[in-house]
Amino acid sequence: MSFTSDIIVSFDPGETTGYCKCIATLEPEKLVSYMDHGEIHMANPDLAFTVLELIKDAKAVVIERSVLHGQLNRNKVNQITITEKINTIIDVCNMLREQKEIEVFWIHPESKRLSKEVPEQVKGGHARDAYKLLDACLELMRSGRF
Picture 1 (cartoon, helix red, strand yellow):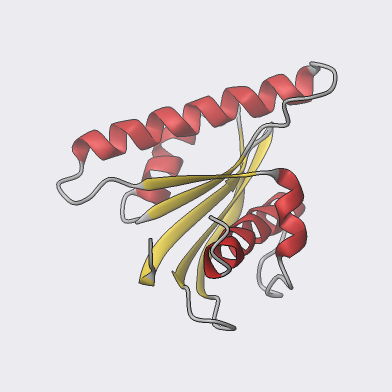
Picture 2 (cartoon, one colour):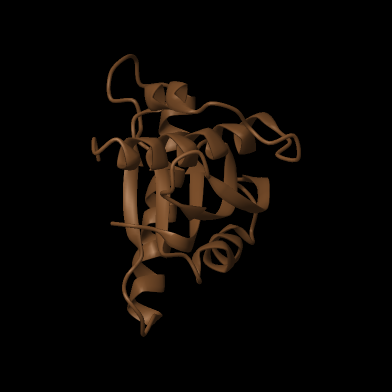
């Protein structure tokens, strides 16, 4: 995949899910034009509508892959639950779209270390993590590892 100023949305799923929406390119050293960021609580009754609004124009979505090792606890269950909700909303959006389907990239949490810096305007820990996921995904693509 090559991005030529396409909308990319990233999600850091959990009880409070961070998101970041940007216009991205694969040009070296030119990451993104920032659009929006925020956090959504999984109990929010408008969760599905909010996610659908975020991804409706997106070319790709980046989602943090659930950690598959360690003890199964409430936080991990919340992360898996919200990840499945986001994935279902992407499937619905793809059925409704006339253009090409949204491509989904699953990023391992440790890949966030590839992110160089987060813009000052991206506030909130979960939103900042979502930005790092997007940045890491683009870095993996630029280097040919994705």
